[in-house]
Length: 282
Image 1 (cartoon, one colour):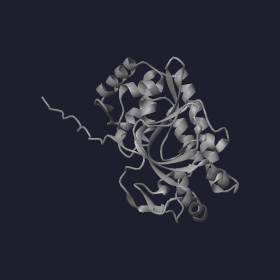
Image 2: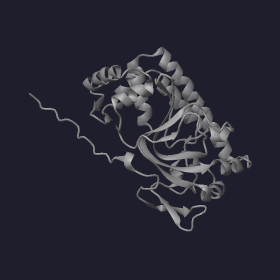
Image 3: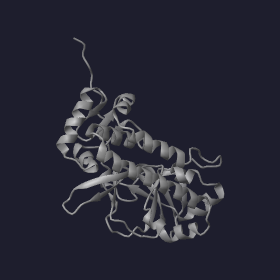
């Protein structure tokens, strides 16, 4: 009888213990922080955010002194429901979920964001807060821009404003498609769509996830996620352990999902820049 070997279990650092500035420095990404005499270091350069990477050099360099590097620890609530959004967070790594929580504690996700976008759009639109929450699903990093500096940038009516408006259109498209998916498609299709969306924003095929977390994001019972994940694992598409999920066969996983994944991905590819400026700093 042929013996099968299980994929190795990756080892993760406990990102939940990290403070907002307790990450390893990235030597190429140093810049003067407003109000401080010393330079601040970050593990990822600002241009690793897709929107910042698309800015022309002149606009990027004008924005650079106002960018503050911050870590995004696993499970950190960037914004709670009704909280004033004082900053715009431009992600360079990690995954952030945006979702609603009802009075009885039930929750449902409407969007996820990675290095292609930002968190804190209420600071752009002038509403200052929303009834939704933004929580870190996979630890990462971001550069934040305070609301006052952002208002000054919008007065230029230049590339940054155009990029952010296109991103907000993509975000609206994602939220609308998720609503359709949650109403009309099977739990297995929704789970596959969600895993693939997270995978697109991850540097590897491994996600730090639990069945409870996925259930909370999709607004379903944990038992349903456990049953669905078991079927996908038995089919050889994923491998689940206590705190991680690895995708083993992406093409077959894509074949099991609904059209919603492709619709959202196509809109993001259409609306957001696909290239960096030649003078971009990596």
